[in-house]
Length: 393
Ligand SMILES: *[C@@H]1O[C@H](CO)[C@@H](O)[C@H](O)[C@H]1NC(C)=O
Ligand SMILES: *[C@@H]1O[C@H](CO)[C@@H](O)[C@H](O)[C@H]1NC(C)=O
Ligand SMILES: *[C@@H]1O[C@H](CO)[C@@H](O)[C@H](O)[C@H]1NC(C)=O
Image (cartoon, rainbow, N blue to C red; front, side, top):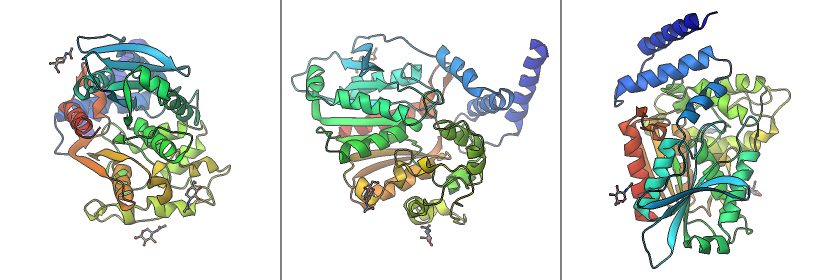
């Protein structure tokens, strides 16, 4: 097939998606969201290796570590893992707070170099007067779980040494770990580790999770059902990315689509992610709770019981020691209920939680805060997150 014919074909599919995809009514800048949604659907349909294509697109949008009048920005490594540091230039007598930020991208894409996230971290450093550390763990499928998780552990271990904190003028009592989407999953998992493991002498003051994905145990929650086709993140794409985090086996995503992926011996986790118990009435609507079906997959994935993959499925004693928490959820997001339930589970064990819910929110908006795609929603989410840090860190 010729190049022109391919382009024409793709354009036709794009237009069809643009016209026929329903978009929730209360969304701001609906035509932009429609175009982005159609583009993602077209590429996932037309390209076998979506990742390569997206990786090229995302890389076009990478920025160099450029310092400005307020912040010194530099790329370096902590324990051989790439990090980007944002060091405020302002003079200051006392030590500064610090934020460790882990980017989203479904564990397979993304970087702190991505322009909107570079801006986010730069603004955080300036507004909160904090040292910010952007982390680039190695990513799946080349480096499957637990490599990305362990890379973040290495970075945090390195940074939390008294000597290193002192080097950057950081107050050990004012450290936050943050992340968006899959980065939120990593941040939540790390917070559970740091707060519970005596090996970490310096603990966190806060964690901030922006539309985080927090579990793979039950993928048929009301938010999965209501937002199955997106916008932007469809259930199918989310499941595909989540599975690629630890396997290329196609049988797993197929089973997960039917919520039949959990192995024997995993039933004790169901009550910890039971949306019928932990979701506020308002979001349950008329949905009927059904338990995930177990034992359908052969070979089975016992890795799915690992709470590093599903921080929401940790038990109460693992949650009790968690620090002050910020969670932002979006209404039109398949991952909405993960965040909503974590709010309640943490509150139930006495953790102090601040929760922002965007009634017109869609997944991933933070990644659209700079040209070529700019959503006002992204700016509003950024402001809420940074304001919370200013007041609480
Ligand atoms: C530097 O900080 C000031 C005060 O917060 C702000 O007005 C200005 O835009 C910042 N400069 C950059 C390049 O962000
Ligand atoms: C889930 O919660 C509902 C309502 O609280 C309850 O009836 C059901 O038994 C629970 N199921 C599991 C597996 O926890
Ligand atoms: C909670 O989970 C941890 C780690 O999996 C385990 O060691 C502990 O025994 C569990 N506690 C309870 C009360 O189930």
